[in-house]
Image (cartoon, rainbow, N blue to C red):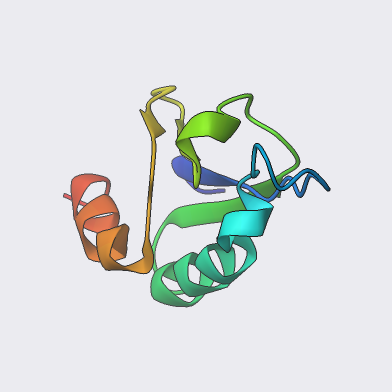
Length: 85
């Protein structure tokens, strides 16, 4: 069992006025995180909604409860480094 888990919001709202994480590309972010962590002691899980749509794409870290907002693929190495040291 992993000590750390990354929860990636993949909620996809139909509204274009207030886009959700899924509409911003979080499915691709989820896949990239899964690839980048596949040999590490980090679990990467999809979650429907974290309630931070205005700040998407959002990743929540467990067990710390830390939220990362506006995450992109460029942030993946930094996230991994923070939780593998």
